[in-house]
Length: 442
Ligand SMILES: [Zn+2]
Image (tube, rainbow, N blue to C red):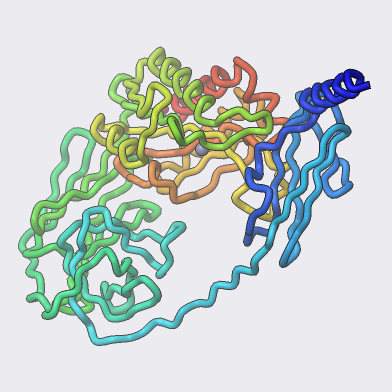
């Protein structure tokens, strides 16, 4: 009898471990969320059906499934059940009401920027697409308001910016008004270079308008009408940057050549090492697929005659800044960051339906490349075309190169998981990227 019981028990254990489903998201049984939906991503093993809160959900032929459950305020209990297993989740939904803070006004005061690359923003929010420029350390600012963790920066009569309080040091006295010293313009090979020299560092903005790129330096210490503009006509495909030496700003707009041998492309495999990226329905790690695609892409592009540099060539940790610095050091003209997508950023979307290729850009100079790649990658890889979107990702923010971030497919989509787990997927994405770049430069 005892032996029979052991036999029955071991049979049961065998069945449950072979056929019970596995969940990769969420990773916690109890959690707090301010999102509209909770997402469930996982796989089954024996072709069994899955019910979430008694609703049958779609399971792909390889066992992958993904589902979103709309959350009510307060406690939500969610039951996931297959023929052989059951799991319970408790998610507490908090209401996330953000009150807009009023701006506190004060008499103009002098502040000095602490570090290079400090964002000057159009709103007092530390997120999104509100960057007006990146200021250098030692820039003199006139601030006259405070909102949350930001100071308001007075630029000109009808223009203000915002800067994080922690990025500046307040000074007791106002500096002398900056003096304009000289302006200059030169052409070098395929670049237009303009300089403006002031007696001290001042705030600036850059506007990428229809026909030209406008670099503006503001001297609010002299008067709120004191603005100096450098306008450079915009080539069709271009990169640009600003450097500073004491009070001398050099603004350079470079035209992209059409010759493959003169073009350097940085290929950036997203995540790596301890940072695994998104986990797919089948438990696949994003970082591994990113690297495969990156390697294939690098070799496709090298075959076409481009100079190629990879930010990482093996599975290791790499900071976002280092990725950018590698590309800048090698003077990359184009930067392609390779990723696979996960939970839709738009929380209203149904995770099960969200699939396909998306391409992200931050600067206007990368929009056309994003459009081209969204088309060529999805057509080569067989994925759905899911659009291009502006987004503030650190690796595609520099204007020194034309930077885009390709999300080849959705890790969390059951149908996409039948693509990205195949051997030919990386090759097909790589061919799509290479074709897109060739189309773009001609
Ligand atoms: Zn990623």
